[in-house]
Length: 113
Length: 111
Image 1 (cartoon, helix red, strand yellow):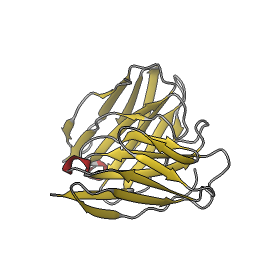
Image 2: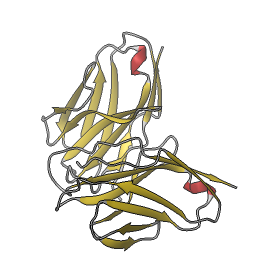
Image 3: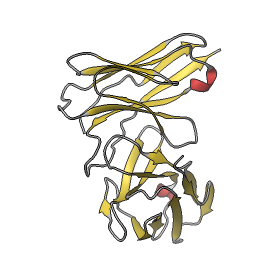
Image 4: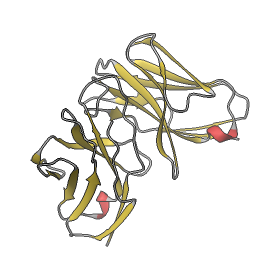
């Protein structure tokens, strides 16, 4: 089975801190994605990447950046954390970017205080 | 991805069959219909996918009429552990358009 591992399950950070959320997949997938999920808003796409060193903005990229130096790892960076970035962050990977075959990690619940 | 419409929430008692319908009037010829399931505090997971007629696996069945403008996810004899949010997505299997999740259908199974 494809496994997508997010480095932290729960994280508490202070306002203004730089935060790194790490995601690793073990099935040589080309595509990786970062979503955030908030009550009543569903999953919203932050950034995605089709290949190493490539990145594309999703629907809500403001306040975030990403890094993909290796195929298996996709990092989400909060440059200066703010309380409105308190959320559940979900990483996913897929062989294709279509509707089939996305595998998600278990999520990181980030609280910014 | 084609726009989809599904109920916001549903309730069911344990042991009942649950059918969740998804409307997708502007489905394209090469689009597939895919359902994901999300348990609380977990990421969504793929449960079933189909193109036409009926698909069945160990988790669910998917019924797709001939015009493909809607589809029905059927969960037989639900249990409390089937309480989750179910997302219907319609689009091509490949391409460069990431998945856009709607709000899904929140299924609550009651004892």
